[in-house]
Length: 145
Image 1 (cartoon, rainbow, N blue to C red):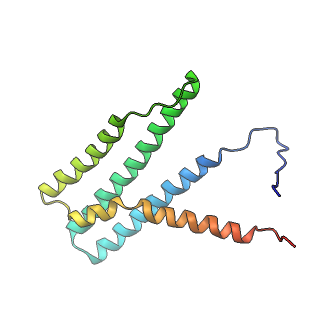
Image 2 (image 1 turned 180 degrees about the horizontal axis):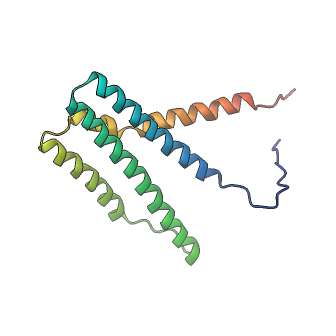
């Protein structure tokens, strides 16, 4: 049985996806900050700069992807047509990210495995969000008997 919440304020409910994106982005930023802080104490400066570069590029990539997809769907909804995603946007985004890592690695500023690990900051953010949602499902479940 579905449950409907009463909206007594008369204002439209908040967009559920907006808070999700904010939480994922914030978790990514916290993950990058924690990993870089631990790396400062435990690893060489190549590893630390690799994690910092990869994490920063990961945050940039997430923001860029989210805003470009939102713009495509907003323009499609305004025109009343099907969304048209061009592959050039994706290729450009990954080209910029890979070029930045390649240039930093070429000049021996970063450790390549650390930069790749920093680019993976999206993974812990998804695990944190999945754990959060799982917790709320278990806590707020309704008895069926």
